[in-house]
Length: 85
Image (cartoon, rainbow, N blue to C red; front, top):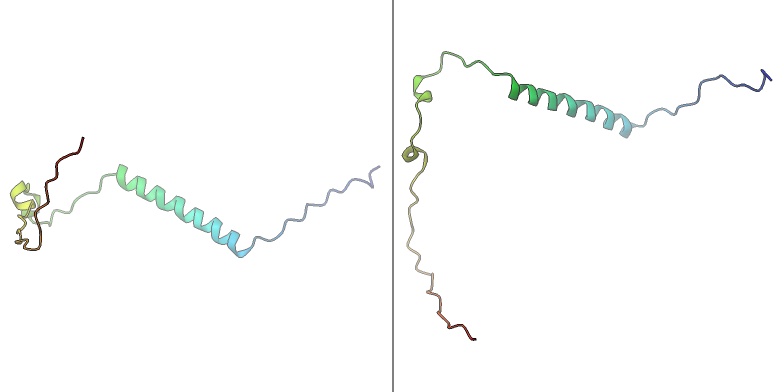
């Protein structure tokens, strides 16, 4: 009865190259996500050497640039048709 029991460890095949790439890629992705979440949660201290000009609030006039409208010569007026009922 004791001779029938086999307590040897099961044979596990070696992981293939693609399985290794997948495993380490998943580890890298998880670490990258943790770094991104920590970057959002933890505030980053600003250096005091920056110019005071960069902290001035920008008005909508300085942010929005007026678009120069080019004359559209090739644009033809649309024909107006009456709806048929």
